[in-house]
Image 1 (cartoon, rainbow, N blue to C red):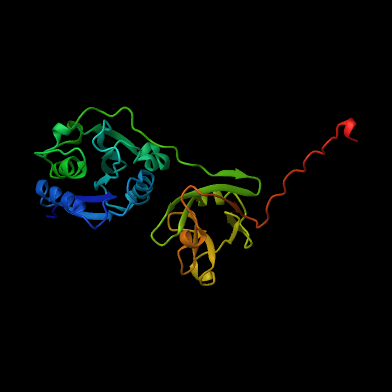
Image 2 (cartoon, one colour):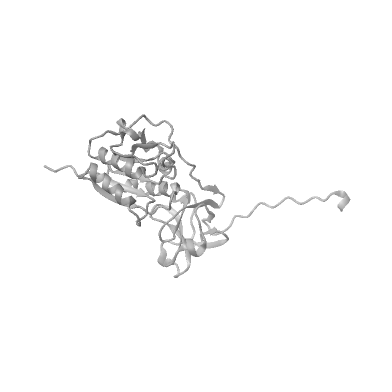
Length: 287
């Protein structure tokens, strides 16, 4: 008879790898669920960068087997009155602070968001709860208990009725152009925009298509090798969104791109003509 696979727990944090913080979380998971499998998605979210954490979670949550438990700890409000919460997103379970961390998941598929319950500190199996390390003292042990089947999500606290989320910037469709912005910059320095293949499909894309950002004109290519080494290009990335890179280099560093930067994509390679300005009428006394 085939055995049920051990529970899978995946981690997203801003703890980095220098200190013991991520390791302490893993230890607490194993303390309460020795049979768990623990996988690291990343511990390198920029410190306190909730928007990047939200983007990373939404980008990979569907790549994991159903019933994975995601522990997401990017928590600049730790120790304040911000609430911890645990609930369902599609076939997965997520435990995180209620600080906007599931905003991208809501934006991508609001129907996938199930019930979330507040995680009351007194329901954590930890003997000690610090004011500054809830990853170790609340999120990890609670996830371990739930994974072990010794605690149910709905028993952790009251139903959440006010899940915080931040606004996700949407691209704007114009005649002959799409305006957007940079959402995320990956480890290679590739700048991922908010313009998706769905927006691009509204246009007939020509070989002369290009993108402009910070007055830099960047041609559309299919992949890196179609651009000369050291030259910038834009392309549809693996997530289905338009990205900006430098072949063999770090696009964000070399081009000076930061998250939130505005950009515009011209699918036919021609910048739309602006309507002519009305003539300036001089005052009769000035003629």
